[in-house]
Length: 217
Ligand SMILES: [Zn+2]
Ligand SMILES: [Zn+2]
Image 1 (tube, rainbow, N blue to C red):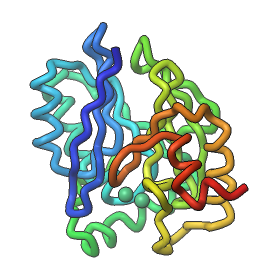
Image 2: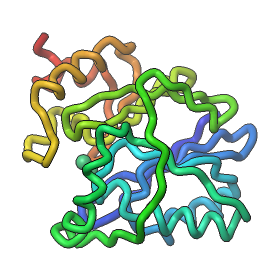
Image 3: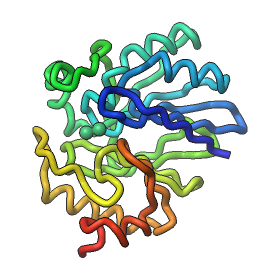
């Protein structure tokens, strides 16, 4: 069984998620934007070993806590846990993190070394639940979705929200690319659960009905 724990972090309620492969008590943490003590408390309570930290894109609410989490895990587990994602098209976004940190009052807990991922890559950090990397630019140039076919779910970062998209213009955001990414998303099964960075979860089928950006072709 794949257990998913969502923790709302930062001043803008970004959903950090812990994915736990219960059979082996191993986990990955996706988008630890902040409030690292609360993330660590959940990890300790569930007694899991973290194999990787994954990022959907490089915005402060998704990666502000990454350095502190990596340090805390190093202490707890005795080895460095790798940080992966997003796509290298996001690399310029790293320079904006300090500014975003001030604007949104979200601490940047330090610089971090991440390995960028490419479209179509398969990640095997959870033995029973491989994740597929999908490059979905638009909200940011290097935004990724992580698709788990075994559990029929997708972590979408800020590609879309329930019933809409992020309309605020961000440095590097691109409406045309966003529409192409949403079109690509629609090709996955309707039953696929969508886990957004902000707000309630949904499914692809539900969004096709209620989200004007997905219902248009
Ligand atoms: Zn966000
Ligand atoms: Zn974002």
